[in-house]
Amino acid sequence: MKTTNPKQKNYRIQIFSLLFLFSIEVVAQSGVNVYADLGTNNVSHGLFIKSAVLGNYKFGKNRLETGIQTDLKNYNKHIFSGYKLDASRDFMIKGILTEIHGFYTTTISSGIIRESNIGGMFRMRFTHFEMTLGTNLRTFSLSQSGIIVYENQKNTSKMHEAGNFMYSFGYNLKPAENSWNAGITLTNFDHFMINQETNPMVNLHGSYRMKSPVSLYAQAWYKIAGASNLEVNYFGFYLKTGLLWNF
Image 1: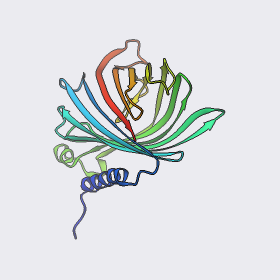
Image 2: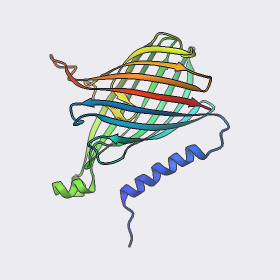
Image 3: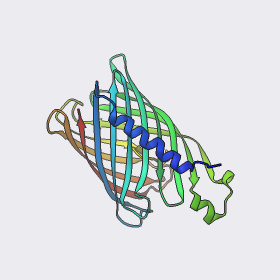
Image 4: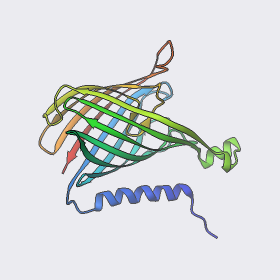
């Protein structure tokens, strides 16, 4: 009896999600976010370069986003290094724009370890201030090669982590509808990365809307380790540059 490789099944689901998003008829607002990350950290073995494409489709108050991440330069031998699926809904609370999100991400940090996260969060947006709070369940899995190398049985190849607190607090100089903006954010997550609560990142960001549907943005991320300890240590730094195209 022929069995389906779990890795192949996972890739099929990811490819189907992307094809579904980009092939549906555009009857509402859709958009694409394309960006690149360039930086170093304590475990990157030098410079790393990543790129990602995220597509979104909004119908009414609902929004679906999916995308992939690739490693252009990294010690990770896998070119494809991440996949994301996010579903959200907008609503108003006393005139404040609020979003509820449910998401799933999977990333390959090395040739033998895969990390997957499933969780939810809500985001509130004010004129200048943004706040996001949420939680996620994390699972670390050994790949088939990892099981062979470490001689593990399949029933011991996964490790589950209890709920992790996610947060983001940001301030923008201008309202969201302004043609240009700049601000600062303290957070412990990015599109394809969720850190422990005690490993926050500081994000300095700026954006400029060239024309109505196209915006350019740049971000500088500084990551620290051990914020709850007496001594806070440097972990990594990276630059993100990208383009947002709403159509």
